[in-house]
Image (cartoon, rainbow, N blue to C red; front, side):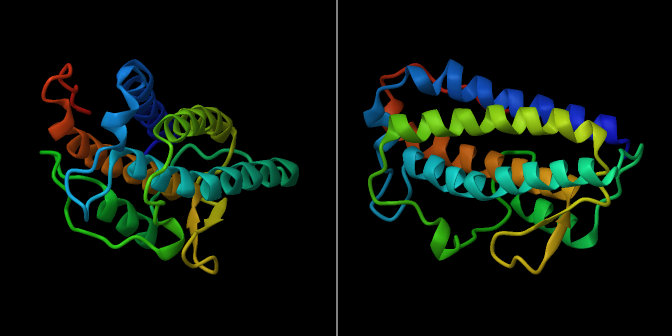
Length: 198
């Protein structure tokens, strides 16, 4: 696929996430974000903390890799081709077209959220991370998405192409924002209806 097309799509998707977080979720009472649909299920705030844990690892790793590529003079490439491992991870995370998840997955121990995270703090950090992601997508336009590689959080000896890392990272966000919306549904019966991510 064309690099510019990929980055434009990722920008649009991230903007959609931002509009959801800023335009809708910031208006909700913290109690709705903190509500669990059942004792064993995550609240929306826990979904956000889980995403923030990933962002705390991947966003600095991506920025560092882009900066190093710039110092080494690794310029952009017109085309991006997904690697088999990166494509596998992205497809595994990405929800189906109807919004349902393809498979249930157990989170790594270091990415399990706390029992009762602060909803407002988690949402504010998430918004900051999305704005950082937008900035990095802009910087990535001058970077070779095929050559620059990012170590994955659960196995740093495995490295994904930068383009695949962006695809995996945004698919992971989409997955857990849908989960968060479902977690809030029982508590939002008397609140304004949530907009879909589509």
